Amino acid sequence: MTDQNSLVEYGFRRVIITITAIFCALLEIVDTTIVNVALNEMKGNLGATLNEIAWVITAYAIANVIIVPMTSWLAQQFGRRNYFAASIIIFTVSSFLCGNATNIWELVFFRFLQGLGGGALLVTSQTIITESYPPEKRGMAQAIYGLGVIIGPTLGPPLGGYIVDHFSWPYIFYINIPIGVIATLLTLQFVRSPKYAEKKSRKEIDWWGMGLLAAAVGSLQFVLERGQEDDWFSSSTIVTLTVTSVLAFFFFVWRELTYKNPIVELRVLKNGNLRIGTILSFILGFGLYGSTFVIPLYTQATLGWTAQQSGALMIPAALTTAFMMPIIGQLLQKGVPQQYLVAGGMFLFFVYSFWGYKILTPDTGADAFFWMLIMRGIGMGMLFIPITTLSLSTLKGQQIGQGAAFTGMMRQLGGSFGIALITTFISRQVLYHRNNLVSSLDVNDPAIAQRVQGLQHSFIAKGMTPDVALKSGYQILDYTVSKQASVLSYMDVFLYLGLMFLICIPFVLMVKGHKKKKVDLAEAMH
Image 1 (cartoon, rainbow, N blue to C red):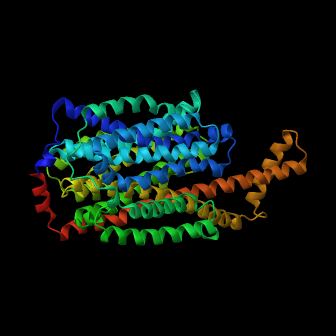
Image 2 (image 1 turned 180 degrees about the vertical axis):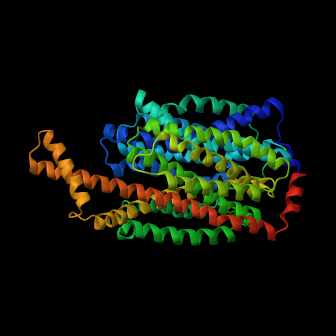
Image 3 (image 1 turned 90 degrees about the horizontal axis):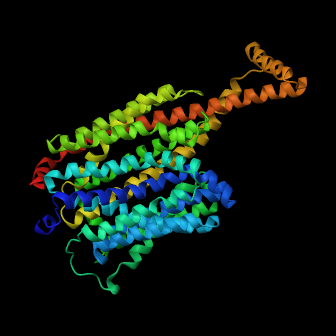
């Protein structure tokens, strides 16, 4: 334990290290979502199609998911401080290049580089924070880190909306530069590297592991992000990449379990708590990114709000989560079992989703969302820290970094799965609901005939000829049906997301009941 304690910091140094690490985590996460609001601007500026511009998000996500599992190993190779500083520099320089990109593929390439720098920031900052605090204060440390991770995705859209409305899209990248420079200087000055065993020689490096991992995760992420647009398995690219991903994962696992110096230490998953934590992180990512994705989509596409309005809607919920984090940290320090908090958080998330299911209409007002989103904020606060502390609670030394990398990767993948499934689900449901609504509309029904006639008269009054006015009347009716169909689809998303969390509750409570992990926790705390 001595080597680990040597990294525990006190007083001023710990404050500086914590702030630096959180800023870096925030940089990376805000950048995942800040772009969403600016896609329209970029599309016009760079003359790109919708499919091409989507790559700005996809490239970043793919790079993220490839680099995250390797961070622990890379930190050992180069020393954590150097690797962390290098990641910030790569991220900052790529941000500058992204802002200066002159065509869409340049931008996509620089976003990929930015993702390679950014992915490391997330996990390494979590490890740095965890190890800077003594074991009994780890719950608090995770609370502080969690602030960044939960608020990040929510901060992105309103910040992006503001920048795009008042400046131009390159500034969403330029904003990273000053923060990156300060973070690099603070890292070099204050962050310390643990003493690792000797570095591996070039011959011992797990090049095959790296290649297989990049192929497996990169292909999977591509399939998830692009599947819906390319109509899933009717596209030969999607089929090829799905097969590639499955085979690469299989050989990757086999390679890592048999090779002497694996790039990802899969054996760390023998730890029961980490295994459960990894699954829970996946579900958390699914809920966190899924719900952050679906609300702006609904408010902008169906209710016609601006980017800034729909971003601002999410702020109270983020502040609630921020307020909850330290409280949850305190509860964990007082010894409240993590699984009870996770179960409580999942139940609140179910309440939030069911509430959403109840209030969605073609013209729901902004006020209706307030308490529902506050509920989401409290639920997220109760999920994040307990899941993370549960995952890392019984790990020591080097394993903490490896464990953090697993939970980080699963949270990202959960988010990608969530968004991919939700987009597919929405477009399928819209068709289904539309067909249902259309089949129940009878043109001979007096009420409908009256409605169309009323519309026709109002259009004639505006100077249209009767036949054009009638056609316009039917178009309005058609538009109303489409809008109603999309609202019904969003309702389904909320309902099923909520049910998914509700179904998980008994498992969360059961899993811990069978294992006497209380003892381990107590040991980990001493």
